[in-house]
Image (tube, rainbow, N blue to C red; front, side, top):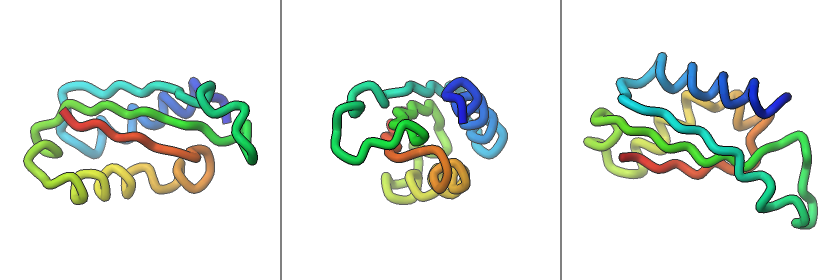
Length: 86
């Protein structure tokens, strides 16, 4: 999958399934390109979400919710997902 398409899918899913003021998706794959076993078809994503809904949850609950929303993308296209809640 193309990174721009993946970013678009992530933003759409997060904004449709959560009450949030801001969603920022960054491709951090370049930081891992020389690592052993690096797969160019899977991406390292940094996801920043400004959401009162998630902020009111504990960290584990909020991360579980995001992982559930993006479960298909995690299986297919995301190798690593860093989640920051604001």
